[in-house]
Length: 341
Image 1 (spheres, rainbow, N blue to C red):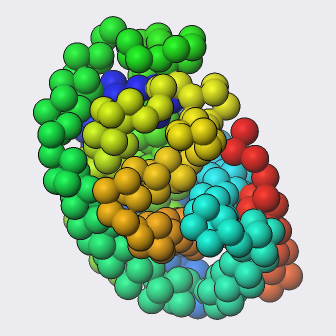
Image 2: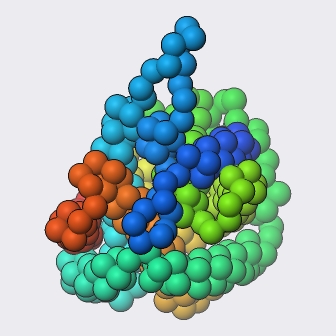
C-alpha cells in the first residue's frame, strides 16, 4: 500500500530476475556443502565462499573471510527478517480479530516455537512440509474468492497497476508513493522479502536436501519465487487494490506503515484482513490462521538459517546451539509488542 499499485509490477519484475538468481545460488551452495559428524549435510553461501576456488589475476585467493561476514549478517537477519516482522504480523492479526494482548501472543508462540526449533532439523522439516502446501492452497482459495466477489474492480485494478508503472500513484497524497523511485523501491524490496532470491538464505536449507545433483536442486528452487511472489503476493495485492478501488484509503498511508480506513488505523496484515472482511463476513478468523501459518513457517525456516550460520561462526556444540535458539525466541517476544516502525 505504501508504493501504490505500481509496486506490484516491480515485485513481479523482481521475481522474474529472482528465479535466475535463486537457481544459481542454490546450485552453488549445494555443490560446495559439507557432510557433518551426524551424517547430515550443511551448506550455504558461507560454505561456497570457504570451499570453492577463487582466482584474482590468475592467483588463488582465500574467500573464507567473506563467508564469515555473510554468516554474521545472516544471524542478524534471522532476528530481523525471520523473527521480528513475522511475530509482529501474528500479534497484530490476533489483536485485530480477537483482542488478544500482543505480549501474550508473543509469549505463547515463543514457547511453541521453542518446542519445534530445539527439536532440530528433522522436526522442522516434518512440520513445514505439512504447513506450507496447506496454507498456500487455503490462502489462494480465500484471496481468489474476495477478488471474484469484487469482480467489477478487477479490470480497473490491472489498469492502475500498469498505467502507474512509470508515473507513480496519482492517489498518493504525500511524498512517499508519489515518486516512481519509491514504487520501484517498495516493489523490489517486498519482492525480495517474499522469495529471498539472491539473498543467500534459502540455499542454506536447500543444501541439506538428500539429492546428490546440485543442478536438479537449483531447478526445484526456481519454483519458489514463482509461487511466493507471482502467485501469492499478486493475489494479496489484487485483494488490496480491488478493495481500494472503492476509495477505502489513500496510498502512502501515514508514511510510517499504516493507513486510515473508516476512522481506524490499520497496518501490516490488518489491511488485508480489512479487505477480506469487506467481502467475506467472518473471514477475520480464516485470515488470522493464514497469517499465523505463513509467519510461523517463515520463523521456523529462519531459525534454521540463523543456527547454521551461528555454527559456522562459533562451531558445533550444545551450549552454542542453545544460546542462539534462546536469543531467537527472545526476539519473538520483543517483536510481538514492538511497533511496525
